[in-house]
Length: 304
Image (cartoon, rainbow, N blue to C red; front, side, top):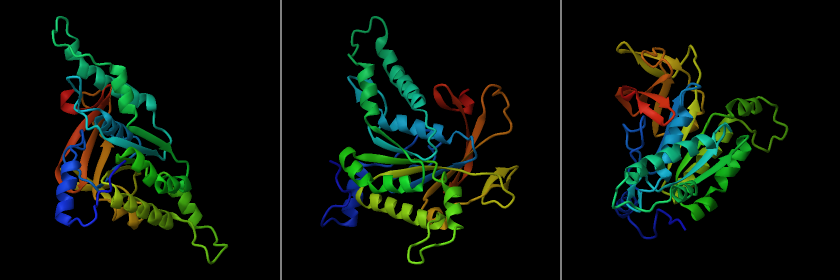
């Protein structure tokens, strides 16, 4: 059973000391590696479609659910449980399975060398099954199902001790909810359903989770090109606005970390692959990273 991360008669100093020891800052895989993420962080991965946002989530999933080591084999994982709320309903479980099996096989490769006298006995299938038990997956087809899933999470988290909550894509139902906002209000007593009211409820439910469970939230968000924009990218030493913010202020102010990912127009030597860039907007960093998506996952463009 997962422990509440605030104990009775515990000072703030004692709580922080204990929580940071039990759940230290997470150093996530590229391109999220620049900024360490701590408990209660709300990280938003912003980008157009496609821009490898879901692929980035899958890389984080694999890193989290892998064990640290088993039978002398170093897997380098965090042994954390992950709950994935799929609002786009497009996640390919086969892709996650493929990436996970590759990491497990690669970690075991040095121990399969012929003539190794200290070869550990490690069943890769057992490790794979152990990892997948840490991955919880739920599809939501509208905002009502999304809110319902958040409301029942406290029971799931108590049983499974989820460390990371992933939401892909947080703005999936924005257009539908916006349409509800324009409908006439038939019952003056009942609060009208709309984008603002939905996200006020979403933020409140996530806050309740964070009050009782020390975890982080990773949410992707698809943005589109607009003339009047909110997000900027660096172009020739300056800034150029390219993407529009459309989420309610309730959600915008709730986000504590934000990174912008987008495909680069200049493909250079990557003839068969799209090269992407990643820029931290919150906190704003003066550096950007470039990466490509390969069969084995995400790689730094300089390594290709």
